[in-house]
Length: 148
Length: 164
Image (cartoon, rainbow over all chains, first blue to last red; front, side, top):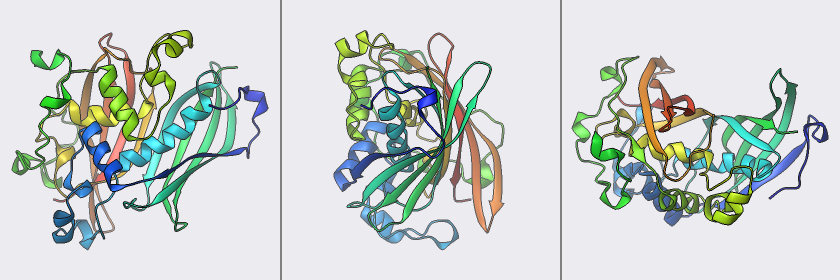
């Protein structure tokens, strides 16, 4: 959990590291079971080997769920905001490249804008997920509502 | 539909991905604007906690009842990404999110209220638009999740690359 802060404490350009996570084959399988998304793209090597996806796309091996990556990005926000700093309100993601079993991914967040509206105090955040080969696997725009 | 408002039993979920696969819509079959069939799901602390563990997120707000009760949330809640689970738990095997060859390209969800153990979540889901870009066929879909109080708990859009 992070230290408490207020809206005025955070300047544009503030950065922090979210979770660093090693994604194993077992983890992908557990996510498939827990999220009920059991598409064979995430667990069946034979299916991956014999399947060509849209536009001739092939994958080297099974891949992690985009929504699992999404959950890592949101966790960066909730670890920062909860319990008392604010609420995660929105995440818009673009999945840039797959996460493969054995990859270690790091979530990074930067506050890129601030806005006080009639009813709220908002931090606009840029979220990036990189793998251990320095490839960007996902990017996102997040919105945090700050409580005080 | 009534049986689905009973507590959701993950053990009874049919994990056979290929069941009814031939009935799932390809890009050609999607009718933008048409709401797909779904059913309400009553969620438990155990299902939330299994989901949270699967993403390595052990926030005490999901696990520690006393801690959560003393927090501003007043009780256990779930990770905001829990709606990934409802996309699949609330829909039938022939739902277009399960069409073989579908790849999730991006997602944006607005979180209104936390989902809590005991909530019954209803999903309104549809393909909203479909496009061809750089030779690929994509669908844009929207999802609105409501709880048993008819409060919207989450709403947003996603886009998938999918076979035709």
